[in-house]
Image (cartoon, rainbow, N blue to C red; front, side):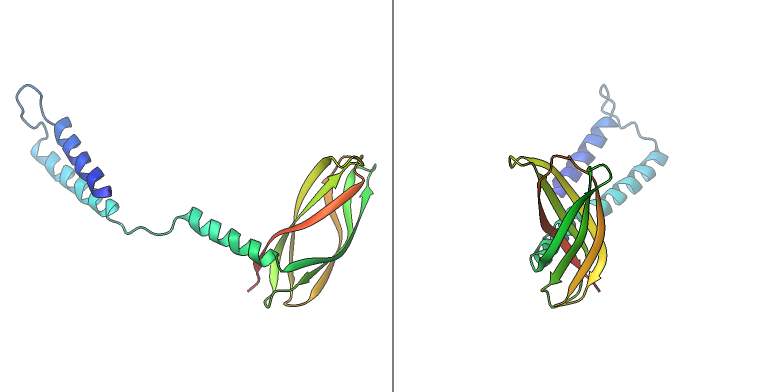
Length: 165
């Protein structure tokens, strides 16, 4: 496909430099050298072997992180409201790493619900710490910021985590 584009570009370039009335090419002799170098560089660029895109690499890393997160369990947790009952604070969060390797940078998501069951807030927070393999670790006083003061129930989820090296 890229070779077809390249040939089409060359044909277009020759047409662009050709005088319509006489059919004479308008590029001076010194211009042919520049045109030749340009075509050579274009051939090099077009024929670069394809590598996985950055987006593909990112998606693979996210998928691995989600798989790792499936083996991290919330052992226990408690929340409270701070400030003027509008700051959500996780008093204590104990996570258990059931992976056979240590994990780091754990992204949690906390959802707050009203008494009616309506979702009021959804907050993400990354814990920049390491949990050893097959161990538990407790984190305290995690400030999640402003929330709706009508929140009556909360739910926590481990979204992703990365393998610690």
